[in-house]
Amino acid sequence: MLLFVLTLRQPAVMAGLLSLGAMLTPASAAESTPQSKSHSEALDNISISIGDYIVSPNANLTLNTPYGSASSGDVSSHQVHIPRLKADFLLGHSQGFAFDYYGFYRQYSDSVSRTYSTDPNDLTFSANASVNVGLDLANASYKWWFGSGPDVIGVGVGAAYYRIRFGVDANAATNINNASSSANASYSSDAVAPLIQLGWRHAFSPNSRMYVDASGIEKIGGNLSGRIYNASLGAEWYFAKNVGIGAEYSSTRINIDSDGSNGTLDLRMDGPTIFLKARF
Image 1 (cartoon, rainbow, N blue to C red):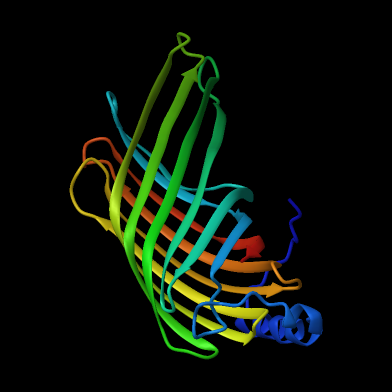
Image 2 (cartoon, one colour):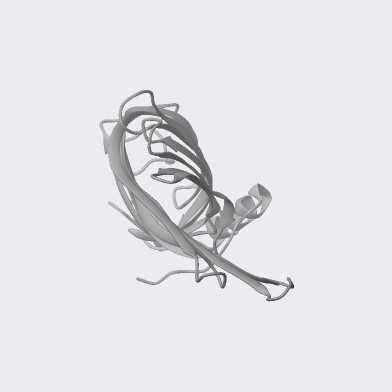
């Protein structure tokens, strides 16, 4: 898969790129645009996107252990690349089905070592801890599109499946009587929750577009309650009849409570996704 490393963070930059893409689109590509069932050129019959989601996750994890509660505080990781898959299918003129999936696993580690001068011996203390966070998130929704021409507004309802895995490992030791202690805990579970989506699509031409999406997932009660919110701004350009590229910037907030007894996870992810796209 060929990935184009391009980060678009400002709407004005996206609009400029799309306008340029519209001017550069060969006439033959425009003439061979797949015939859409929709009344709007902002929608395709079938669209499949494979991408690289580039983020620097920030996590805050609390776990209950046999020794008490263990909290990671706010921890950040270096940039990670997460595979992502999206698909949209148009049914009739103004309705359709949408799917979105991504998953990742990340480990955060830290250590500390201190020496204190005491009489008659020095006191040495060392500790290390690691936090493991894993997430799989899949959304499926049925959408209604309103409007025609270059602009449409969409409303979607559906379900989200999410699977969370997190854990804490900590160790501490001193040189006094070779004393040491350790604590570890882990948790893994999954759940299905209702999903609501809102979206807007604008077509500069049949081959260049921009869009804005927002979604909310909330589950009350059960073994894995919580909330997941996402907002995205994206652009796409088809340089051939069925093949194009896209760029999307997303901001995601995840708050999970494992039934109040095992722990909680707060996860924040912001970053771009670069897509290779196909339409039919």
